[in-house]
Amino acid sequence: MLITSLLAILVIFVILYQEFKSSKMAGLILINLPLALIGGVVAIQLTSKTLSIPSIIGFITLFGIATRNGILLVSHYRDLQLSGHNLIDTIINGSADRLNPILMTALASALALIPLAMGGDKPGNEIQSPMAIVILGGLVTSTFLNLIVIPSVYYLLEKKKG
Image (tube, rainbow, N blue to C red; front, side, top):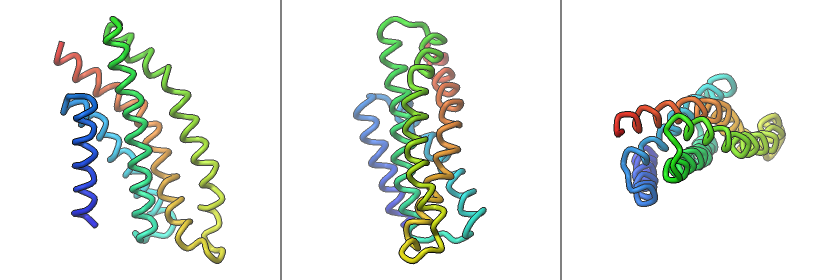
């Protein structure tokens, strides 16, 4: 599983590099993965304390959501900078523009997953519940930390470049 996970992260990095033509921007987007991992691990610790196949599937799903949120922010920042905005305006306006789509996606996902997470003791939910718990925990941390860490690191990278 570890080798497969590392291979998946490498493939994601290569795809992001192809899109942004920058290893720094691809790495910046991948910063979301540890942010998502924090919430997923805490959620497991607070509930079952067991890492299972369903919870690992939850991490994979969570990494996809976290990566998408990072892509939303970084691509919008890049578009704003290409249209002539300065760095500070790019980060402030870009973050404000993408706040609603990111929060709406996280909220919709969380609302759909809450019944699955709460029904872990019901028959048939042995797989769904651990997966939902991991995704919910990771959504909380990755969504909020994404809105702090990504703009900060983007600022540092672009400030160093310019």
